[in-house]
Amino acid sequence: MSMHVEAFVSSTLMTFFFFFDSQYMYQEKCAVINTNPSLGIGKWIPKSCNDTNGFICLQKIDSSLPVSPEPTPSSNYIKILNDSIKLVPKNMSWDEAKKHCEDDGANLASVRSEWTQAYIELLALNLKSPLWIGLNKAQTNGYFKFVDGWFLKFTNWDRYEPKSFRNCVFVDVDGKWKTSDCNQTISSVCMKSTDVPPTDKTADFPGVCPEDPYEIFSWRKVSWKPFRGYCYLFISEQKSWSDASVSCIEHGGMLVSIEDTFEQQFIKRNIEIFQDSHPSYWLGLFTTKNGVWQWLDKTVLDYTNWHSDDIESLSFGRSSHRCRISTSDGKWIKDRGWMERPYICKTAKVLTDTLSPSSVSPNIGSNPSGRGHIILAVVLVIAGLAAGTVVALFFFKKSGHYLPIHNRLTNFDNPLFFGNNRTQSGLVDSKTLVENADEENTLPVVNM
Image (cartoon, rainbow, N blue to C red; front, side):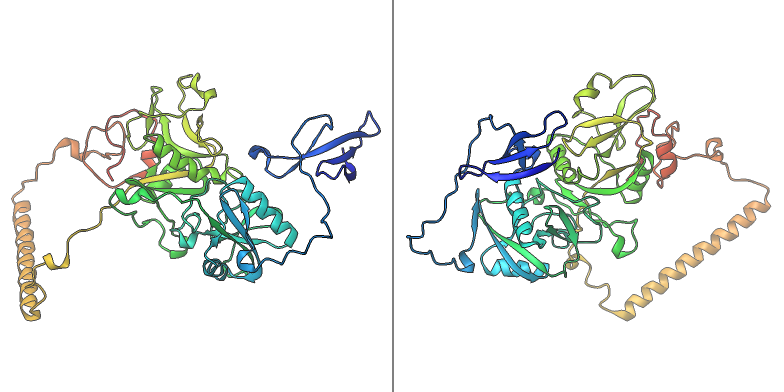
């Protein structure tokens, strides 16, 4: 169907449309402004003119009344729920726009509801220009969080967004969120709000997120996101479950385990903003060859959040399965591991060194001459021990004797093979770890 005629009727915003139909030459339709968040607040939806809905009246301005003075720029805010929003039609960089809002006692807008989104989208459409909002991951530890303290609970990302190497975000004329170079000069939106952002409770858990050992170039480094006693990586690069497991190990963690509803909500909040581009992320949950669900990091499985369609078939067959989490509702879905998907890594926080410089002995380093004598003495002792060991081994070998070696130690042995009985800690062999993940074993997968 295609729209041919649009007309306002009876001075209301109810609109008549005429649609061409294959059976009827014309079919009369009316339109309503949608208020359902799932369909897009503010969008126009065709409805039968016989339906009953609320309505909005419009009348012409009474010319006999005095003209109201134009509002000053500092008070030119429009109230939306508990927020007040102002358009700033001046081209500025993101930092300049942020300072402009702060000088007015406001912040760059945090888009936390569909109502705010609809209004800012309308501002951008009427201005025919994109608008900066309060997202700059360079100022929020490498992940997107509004600069006024609010976490993202609503997004409208464009396809293939957010881009990895662009930090700032604007709302384009089509309403989509897009990342950009922060030095780009465009208009912006300021916001004042009576809502108070939640406090960050990560300070209740000591420790910091570790440095990423895998990325050696600063421009490729990823940022761990703290939550309670752990840190998390949300990696959008798509890999199979096995390759994702290896990647997490290389980054210094493991594929994520979820222990309770609080951790579930934290993860859901951080992945639902990508549901337009990624339907799900890999979790570290898999079935052993005996059909038992198990976390890869050996966390006790005492919390689940399965999708209703998967509950009846969790033990179907003897083949192995992996688990992914939906970005739309946070439900867990059983899957084969060969599909390539984004994934989540998890590692424990690192406790900072509390040893103060004053606790170090003041004699060390206070006398350079004395320190040099100590180092020389240590070197001579080590050299003497090494020489004695070499001489002893030489005479021991000439005598025809051999050192006793236990038979078990003469065979190849890797503690990361699940069928091995040794519990000695060693370096991570990520390939054998993942290839043997289906084996059921009570020993730790990896010592970290």
